[in-house]
Image (tube, rainbow, N blue to C red; front, side):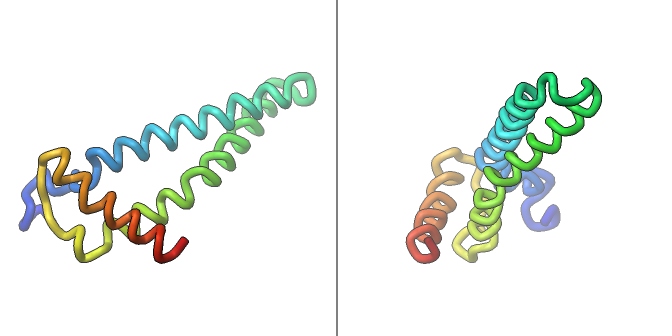
Length: 107
């Protein structure tokens, strides 16, 4: 990859898709963890409550992220995606159209 696209090619797909994925992943975990932490108040000792709420956050993150990661993998491996551009519009349009096409054809 570095040979063909240079060092910046390592970040191919990160902007904006990877950065959005990081935000959604962190937000979904944080939401699930906070929800679990509040639900377990008074039911477990503090340390066990923290550990269990982290598990609840991870579960919530997995439920939210699993379909998004599958879609991202399918978009990134499509032959139409085999280009490289640093402009925002050029970086968004082909993956977005591929994602929409995948959604329509696979549900």
